[in-house]
Each structure stands twice: as structure tokens, then as C-alpha cells.
Length: 440
Image (cartoon, rainbow, N blue to C red; front, side, top):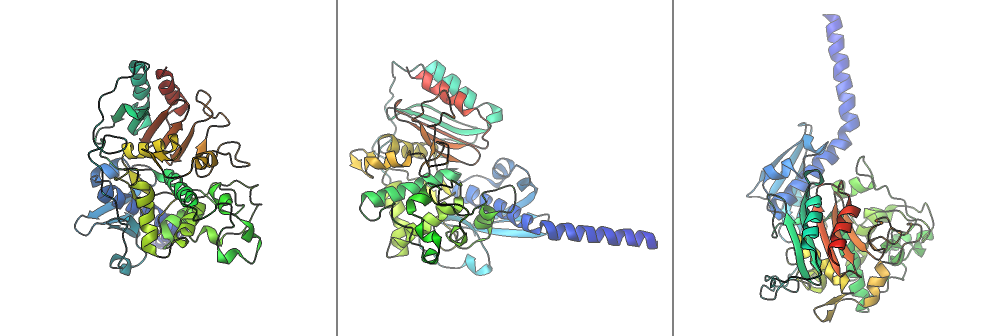
């Protein structure tokens, strides 16, 4: 009996040590699940069952137990009953993880939105397009490319192909359609960059100026420019790792103000010589954007009145942190068609139905390769200038996000291609090649 008790005691000690060691990971696990559940159910308008069986159905997130309160618009996720996180939905600002009970009742500002244009045909409004058949498009070959994208293993949810402003292919997975809002993850970074382009075109800032960060003024970080930050080339330390506890996961799941995490980091390289992909950098940029406005309300409104609603992306919501900063690194939701409108804005070099939202040079700016990125990255956009997609034009550039979210812009071919999914597994070169070859 004594031996048995000792074994039980040792087992209890081992379990306690394991819990203590993995407790921070449980925090991230339940935090991800709660936030994703709240966004999917209350913003994406999906059921909890669909959310758990798709969005949250991967290890280790699928180990969490999720619940929703539809009346209060709250989602909770528990990791083995040891740790529970809560996310609340704020209309206009999306879902956010709480850090204490007062967060549920704290007042907040919401952005003012422009009314949708439901009379003008897509893409300049939301009304249906007239059927257009292009004689130079091989629709059979195009359908084969879409078939490939929607093979079961690729877990694609939405695919849209725009040619000369016209939808020439569009398909959705079961349970989704043209009204379904889907998370763009890091495609949000390209939205954030575009806000800088608009402000620069309006003469309200210059991206070549030093970053206006007070805490950097007494050390070498004072030499970092907004341009360096936009190109992810500041030289600052950052760990962008979603498999472990990292700078990125701590920022997204444990911080009230996500714009501050990158600001705290020291230099490990030289600006303009040290490319390092960082969601913290993009959220720092969101904080810099907020500092350009006299009031918080102006900051919240500008993203919509000067970009998102201006081009009719009326389905889009950019979610904010607890302090009301847009999470410019990761959290924009929109329909596939509205993501396509964003691509068309860049295809037309900032011109939207006759109105120039940003100067044409801004398009050239975002596709200029960042030094040391091997031609792979520009100013919050990904590039093909080094030919990573060998069967597609090197002029192609694109917004890209976790799990295979993409808006591809092909200037010479007059194409915008959207793919929204749950995995990066699909051979994008093969898919893009098929689409391009279908337009003769």
C-alpha cells in the first residue's frame, strides 16, 4: 500500500509539473480558440458546429472545448478544464480576447461607415454584373484550374477570378457563398500598407521619415524609418512563430495594446539590411497611423471612409484590440468578392472608377523588393520578382495570409485572382498557371 501511495504521489507531481510547464501553451490554445470562435460565429455568421469542425479542427486547437452565448455575444474556450479564455464581440470592431472582467462592460468607439452602393454593378458597386463572354477566354481550361483548386485536399472555401473587371470564374465550398465573410489573416497587412499610401498621397505623411516613436529617440532605433517598417527591414528583434510561445502569440493572445510589442524590441541588425517578417511591426505601424489623427474616432473612421467603404468593400471588418487599435497584422474579414475589389484597386494603380485613392507611384513602391528578402517581399505585399512561381509573370504581386489566403494581382494579364482556404497545401503555381493559360 505504501508503494502504491508513493506511485500515486509521484504521478501527481509529474502531472503538476507538466501542467505548470505547459500552462502558457494552454493559454495560447484556449485564447486562439475563443477568439476564432467569437469571430467566426458573430462576425462570420457561422455556427459553432461548423466553426469547430473546420476553423478549429487542427491540433492542438481542437483539444479546446468551445461554447458561445448568442445573447451576450461571448465565446469561451477551455483547455482540458484547466484554463478558460473568453472573447467578446463588439459590433463594428469585431471579436477580442478579454483580460479581465471589466473588459466586457468598457465603453468603446466604433467606426462610421459609408452606405453600400447596391445599384452600381460589381466591381464598383454591389449589384450583379451583366453576363459577359470573352472570346479569348478558354472557359473549359479555366474550369479545370478551378477544379484543381477545389480538390478536397486543398480545403479551398472561395475562389474568384476577375478579368478586365468581370468575374469569369467563381466557386465556393459547401456552406459558403458570395456573402460569406472570410478571415484574410496577414492579407490585412496589405490593407494597413494601403492606408499609408493614401495618407502619403494626401500629403499628410512621408514614409521616408523617421518612425515617430518616442522611446527610440535615445538609441540607434531612432534611425528606423516608416519605410523600413513597411518593408519589414528595421533590424528589430521579433519571433514570428505560431507553433510555440513567441512574440507573435503573446501579442495576439495576451496583450491589451498590440501596437506596443514591437516597440519594446531592440536591434539585432541594421535597418535596410535585415529583413525579418513581423506581425508586431505591422501592428506598430497601426499605432503610428493612430498617432496621425487628432482623435481616436478619426483614426477608426479613416480606414473605412478613405479605403474600405470607398471601394465598396462593405462586408469588411478590421478587428481591433482592447485599446481600440486595428489589428493591422491579422484580423480583416470580408467576402471573396470584396477581397477581389482590393486587388482591382492595385491592378488599376490606385484609381477607383475615376477617383485616384493613392498616387500611381505607390503601386510601384509596394512592389519594390525589400533588400535581403531575395525579391520575395515589398511594402507589406509579397512578390514574384525572383520567380518563385516559375510559370507566372514575375510582375505578379499579392496579399497573403495564414492557411492559404491570397489576392493575386497580375498587371500584364489584367487578372485578379482570390483564393480563401484552410490550408496552403494547394500547388499555387499549378493553379495560377492554369488560370493564366485560359486567357489567351
